[in-house]
Length: 564
Image (cartoon, rainbow, N blue to C red; front, side, top):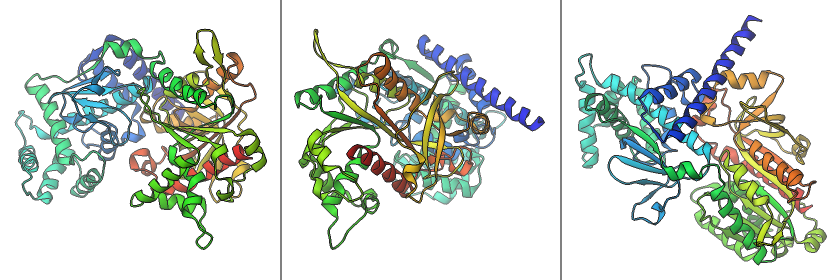
């Protein structure tokens, strides 16, 4: 009993820390700026350390710099951000038409601009979730930078020998001169509070990332800015532009995005056809439909999964282009995003599909497809609250003029996403029966047209139950997650968009009546991580080929529901 009370108390403290974080962040957003080491910034740091998110590893250890967590963060922020004292969060304000180079982080779709040596501008067009994501990542960097500074200065404030040696390495690296990496790892390990082995391993991980700045470079600049703030008064600052503060929450970008899509459907006489909307990664559904006719032969037959693995290999770019070109000649159209949502769309007119050439794994009712000519609309992943904005706007009636509106004939809405599993491993499949919004009383039970029994013929572990929609994956800790798992919620996993999608679907079908009330909904998630296991968090690396099997298993099941 005492252990249960102890765990519950920890979970409550963590939940309170999450609530404080969001209250502080909203306050600072409204205010327009803050200094990371000022009073407000220190409040964020204190709450984040209390929460001690699993994805940030050893963030609460005062001596050790967290290497895997840093790699996770750096991959989601623009290259060179460690060199900038001022970070400016902006709306889409014309920088896309300027002469500044666009910097897109390796693992987040954001347009960023380095306007000078000290300032980085980050374009936020995906709602509050994007702001929370950026601020927590920045706070993590500031916490780790203070540890580096502590190791770089002695008790009298003089620069340690290890720091001086790293300075020399940075100069050689910039001038493309040779230097001993072995010696570099030895000096860097002092600044990181890590072993030589851990430092060398971290260096290699950073070398393989999409950021391209070395671990030497990133650690040096993080420490340098922290020292400059202490010794030279060059303070770091985060600002929010007035345009961003004015536009956030008003569906500015979602409306532009959805209007462009509905205009295309209307102008091509597709708006009144049966419409099946899918939110997923773009490649899996196109490959599931079109790869077999292009790459499989009677002499050399392939399963959809075999073809997916082949197309997932980075070396097979020519094969991917072949499949895409074939798709464009047989009913598929790509609608590139120009609104700022960073959500591309593919529209498939099934009346133009080569039905007789599709894989036997796709259970196609030929008569029904030929008679009804359904349309499949595949939208790329949304991000957090952006899911509500985009789906809400997409499901609204299309305004032809001030007096005329046309509702689309939406038959089904399917969501295939990646999520954290709470009891299981990477590659598992989760089927939600309800979505619960963390930190609120909002919950959305649903009649999922997908069920565990649909996957009985597949050798994958499948769980069914409640999914928790969280405010940000980087703000989860073990105690909160264990509470959701072990309490009467009996949650099976966590993700960021389910609640927002279901909220938009319910308001469109039951309140606005812009779509049919009996619209079928299908949700299925594949496990990208298990945040309760340190070696299986998002910071431990991506799924890679492990993700192919569950991704395509879900894709085929959704397509079979549509085609049959």
